[in-house]
Length: 382
Image (spheres, rainbow, N blue to C red):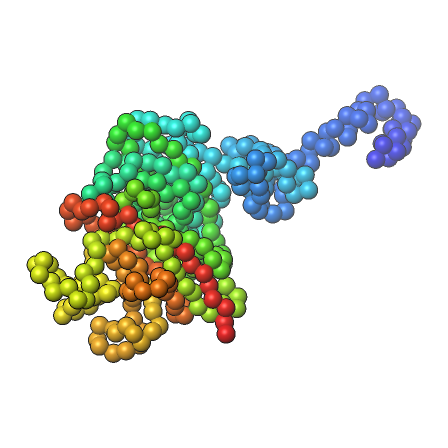
């Protein structure tokens, strides 16, 4: 490039214009700066220099005018990995954005209402995915499961509103926005003087990349861990929850097996009374899966439960015929029998679990309402 500039100087010198021509070093410097304003061919996800957050690959100018933070190069150095982080009172109109508490990464304390609005960046966006990197808020009422002190709400979408509190770091949720035109509102009502921290990654998902319809959580991989919201050994599962956990069927896998994370990792409601109990305690007598003996549908048995498809003839449908059924689980044991290891397999597709926790119906023992932690592993076709 230097030789080309020298030739140009000789040419313009002959015309008497060399005195007004900038030096070669100045031209090279200017050219390098102008390249930063060229549009990047694709705006794709990139990894920030801290290796922890994700961003969108943009040119420097677009990142700056959108109030993003440049965090390392991308697109062969022609762009920057632009990371967006906002707090209370913001409007989000781009793809990957981190919602953080005031003063993050420090803890915040005090009473306040924090609202953030999120608009679809394109008409073909059909879902928002919320990844709770840090989510530590006030715990629910220990005896009722209701979010009394803090509540995190997502409203304005085309699916059921999300209502959460407690400790949900590492969890995620999908929120349908296919048929909406207005912004989705995230509201955090904080009513006590306690310390909190949150960092929530919000991604906008286009139709061809969306989670299957009806899936509020969507897991990938042949094995993993599933937990209900606010699951902890000394915690309490949330009241008024109704959502579906889905697991993608991986290639060459035909069934799936579930087992508790440990001996105390499935506690949803009061213990189930065994079949040989005569019911002398005055309450209803329950079968192995929580079905009241002599009563109707299993859905009448437990206000808090998880429902899983099953494909064994050992279970009978409400109409009395053998075959496919909804396998209902509640109480303090995941398996119907205490003999041998606790493991349930299913080949019904898709691989789904439905969590149904009713509204608070009164004070209950928190020791019986920790929630659920399950390990899953897909089984190869034979």
